[in-house]
Length: 467
Image (cartoon, rainbow, N blue to C red; front, side):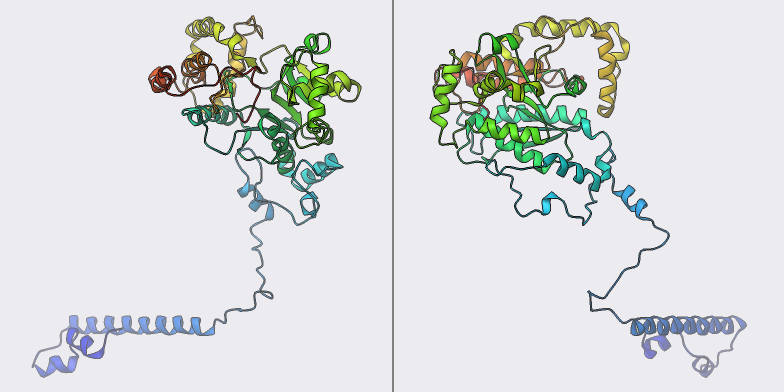
């Protein structure tokens, strides 16, 4: 409020004005009345304000303080507000006990887990928003080493591979987890994937499938989606050839760098047996001898995950074989040297189809890409699948290139980089056509300049993950 002196200097009283001999007019009377009324109202408001603060007694005992929800807002309304665009409630976690409250729970590979199917089922009951379509929920898992790559461009290549996976997952609504730490200090290189997959199962009970994709594998058909209905009676899917497995007993009869495994007790038990051949066990060297004896074409002495998988199919087929689907009808993953020679013709075919179908050329939002993928299928019904089809290969696996370590054949890696530049991004629903070969000029120049010395080509086909 203003002081009396200031107030009087601005608004002289009637007595002061009369002292000057002035005559009061009706206007001055009205003005005085208005000022008096305004002052009275202001005083009342001021008194009311102070009385409100003085009467309010804040509660300092937080244990006894309770907040009653407004009756006009229901719990259902709150839940709906917290749901994501796909209907999942990421805020709701009831206080009911579940397997996470068990102090003996461990994510490590050396602690077996029992009754996982029941524990998952109970968790889903407690989190009902994750129930619908849970049998189609997929978590993509990949990974690389934690240290910088020894190859000067290795980290850049791994970044491009990772971006490719993120793009695919975003388009199809899959979650993705990228691991770059050893979850078991002795399970390195290709063995590191098993602890990562196992930990992902426990951390994501909402996911029905865990899909491991090696760091050096790229999605080259962004429209294609896993035909999960084919695997409804199986728990493990791997790319391979039954004839090479059971008749020739070849260690390259399948590829363990990309596999799909159901989040189940069967999977946990299977991985316990599979990892039992790894470097963390005292029988590691013995298993190397057993696997070389089983697969005569295996040239290196160490026990590896891929030959171990072949061994389980050969020696324990009755126990595991019925639940393992060996996929060979499409490129669940494909050896890149077999694929790159076909890409020019495949691209020409796709361009021809697109020129003749205006609907396929229509620009659209990325969120509705799956609808256009289904539209493409009507034009690809005669394309076939696999090696001799003109359909884009689903996943191209650059085995043997070793992009991180640099332990590769130099010309192989040059071809790989050119392949990524030309064919990797362009098929991405035509959303990234602005990417050109100029982005990769420096990579090819570096490779061709011989500024690093790659080790001679590995004797293996290079199914390493942490290379």
